[in-house]
Amino acid sequence: MAMPVSCSAFRRTALVLALVTGGMPAFAQESADQSADQSATQIASNQPAGEVVLIPNRVIYPGETIELGALKRVTLVAGKHKPDAVATRAEELDGKVAKRTLLPGRYIPSAAIREAWLVEQGASVQVFFIAGGLTISATAVTLQPGAAGDLVKVRNIDSGKILSGTVMTDGTIQVGAS
Image (cartoon, rainbow, N blue to C red):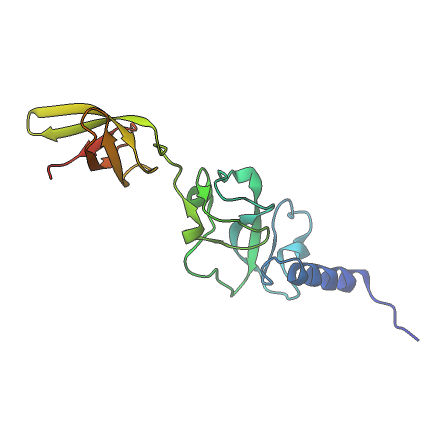
């Protein structure tokens, strides 16, 4: 004869199983709107909840801009820490672009995200050379995409010469003497 299982023990077991089999880190839980249920801030123990992190709540594809709506907050169990080299805070993720597929319930490796391109490959841009009081500008075509601060190659439209320069925050390219 089977013993009756209490509702809270059943819910706790179901939550742990869902977290483990659902691909979510086994030491985390969702933390959205859980203030009404104090036991929801704990997982199968009487320890207080730990650090709150963000993970995808849906598949994020390569090249897609990461928005906060595509992420969910989870709370790590006390005593557990997130792995190194993962992005888990809003300021690390919002507006960044996925380099590879990001799966729901998994940490987001820092190497799997990048800044949004400020200049796209094949775009026409202004190139500036500045030395003291001398400023030379030209129009060029980018040979590779880049974010602010990236070193990219461009082709001068008039001469056909290929130059390397730094992408500036306004979308122009600054080249140095070579």
